[in-house]
Amino acid sequence: MIVHFILSGETLESISEEINLENPKYLKEFHNTHCAREDLIHDKLVPRKKLLLPDLNKIREYNSKNDAPFKHPKLNPEISFNPENLSKIYSVVNTEIEENELGKRSNILSYTVSVKWIRREGAFHFFHLFKNNFSDEHGSMMADLASQSIRSLNPIEVKTDHNGEIVNVKLTQETINNFGKIKERLSDLFSDKYAKIYLDEFEFAVLNKELFNSRMKEDVFIKSYFAPLRNKFTNGKSYFTQTIGEENIYIDIQQKVESAEYDQEIVLQQNMNFPEKDKNFTGKYVLYTETGIVKEFEIQYNISQFGVKNSSFFTVKELS
Image (cartoon, rainbow, N blue to C red; front, side):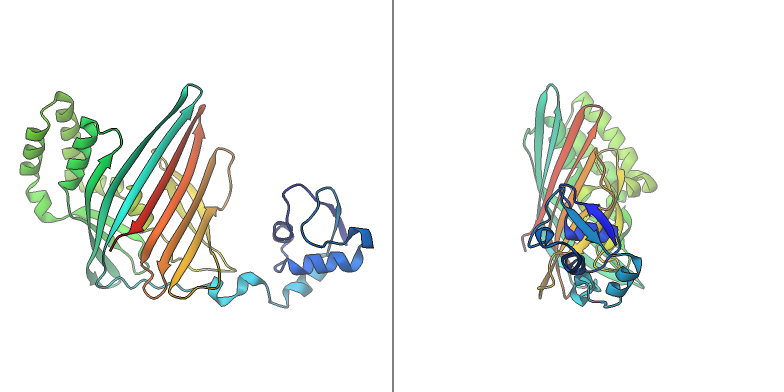
């Protein structure tokens, strides 16, 4: 038996995880069986009070009961991915906020994305993405140029594996063949010298297949919609790696099923597996249980570096 003094913010769940006790109810049961009457736990833990912890042998005995809540089959689902005949339109809102000692500035970009399943080849699925209806809060010329440039590439072809995880992104051959005319039209619409510099860089990025693939894999919609959401769950959790921010910083994400009481839709809650002082991430996805297709999701994260805090709020909702 070990005596532990409860710290502020600790719970039966958090302490049980620390000592590898699978079912937190046994921590309360063990303590109440061995403690003095005035130390009984009735509801929440009280900071600075004593908590009696079971030893390793007792923990093994409790774990052998195999009745931990996180072992419920519905909290360890095998999420399938059956996108055949998928054709959906999503609304997207991306809010970016930058804060420093001088103040705060923000921008809101909204658009729609059409996702259409095209074909299957072996274990791979192919989709066409169409981005349209861009609206930028500030409405600058360069923002208009960027949105027109993205629309000119429709459709973008996305290849995924059998679990819906992104493998490759490329343009259709028709878009590549017609890019000279596309650039000419954009140059006519935006004749500013800065627009010319942008379009020259845009052409280089588009016609370099490897560069286009690597950049589009970091597109916030593509990497979030085709994330490894369907990885295997073990003990109520699944894991994958994602990037956030303009610097594409890698973080490890842990996800859990919100509740075992689901039927047609499953809700996944996400957090950083290893929390960091200068980074924070939360995500919530709603998937159709039968197909594993995303219905909606929201992602929030912030990164603090060099006295600047950048926050992003990204929401996607199915329209049809």
